[in-house]
Length: 434
Image (tube, rainbow, N blue to C red; front, side, top):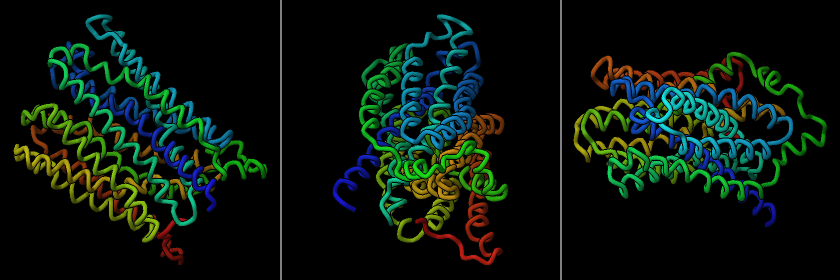
């Protein structure tokens, strides 16, 4: 690869990482605030438990909107190009997050406060639905030969990087302000910072060139009129299995990032800042190790690494809440840091195993459909289900069994899709991407 092409590829990797980081910053600000703030600001007439459930229900609304965003942006990403759709999604996220920071609370405008909160959360969900998959597709279509997973892992790093920024913003604001001031108005500061961050993100993303794969397809007249319809030709069984395979990572991510904050503060009295700092450090490990797993996937096979990662999640989810339940701060940190080690294995290649199932002409639409459906099914409802199970059983055991079961389903689906079905058809399993 010549010097100019190398610089262009690295620019794409950087731009997709920056863009997804900012979008996940916006999205996860909401998750952190839902766990710690919104029940008091927007649902004060509810009991503490009911307010937390209502707050997590609005959190889940964004996930319900993500498939819609995936379908919308996927269609236009396959029709007019990857770059333009990713710019629009970034603007949507930045504007909606800034408006949440300006939104009056329930005591000021009554019913309209939670109603507007839900509306802005819907816009966030639509924006992020177009971002994550599109950034992976753009990165993989610029990747040099033999480095597909490594380059495609960069936009995936945006998830933990966004978590670090979001929790760091909350942690810093909380540390600088008295508790009463933080709960009253200080929580708005991280949301208002979105306005500045999105300007930076746009400056980086506007310098990216369009996907050479899409450009070549357009030049050949191969742009599809209804890409989503054509993407379904992959087959119902393969689409279902890849959907179930992707569910575990999403569910574990949101149990870790959102439910843990509520559970730890209310059950064991861990401080908000203690848990936020633990999540930040775990996310640093998560973010830093993703390119390593991407490089290993290039060498040993994407699906082998994904299967290993899903198995690691199952094992650690069995240990996670028992470790936290010791009530010991040091042991609780072991639980959190263990998540930072286990999560990046499957997450680093999760976007690739979905995107590579589809031809380039329908890749954005098909991959968006699967990824966003898996996130809505696995991630969006996970904190809400976990809170309901915990409340009903007065114990974390039902939550542990729930997340273990989700991981087991994903593990079995991965094996069937990438090993059992190819062998039954008399073909070798696909163990590396190209």
